[in-house]
Image (cartoon, rainbow, N blue to C red; front, side, top):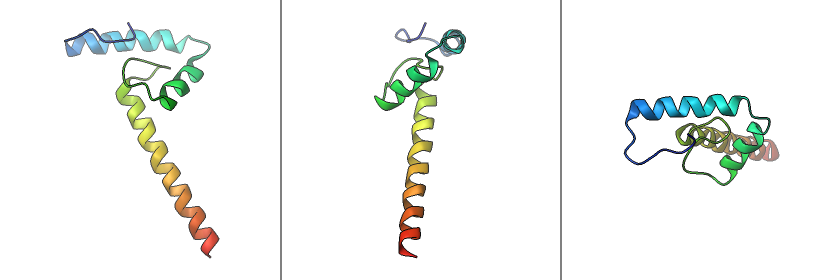
Amino acid sequence: MFFAPSKEPTAARLSREEAAKRVCARCPVMVACREHALLQPEPYGVWGGLTAAERRVVLARRRRRDAELQRSARVAAAG
């Protein structure tokens, strides 16, 4: 349920991912699982209630946020 079989049709993938996310939503370690997948980063499967594509979005947002914080710190230190 958490990992795609080869050549899975889109409708089947979406259904499987939603089922996996429902399991994750009830899991007491969901946040820790998600952080593990983001720190590794895990390239496949549903981890911590997020698909690989959703994790890529989270990672991109974190990189942008970190870059903005670094820029702000440099500006503050200079001025």
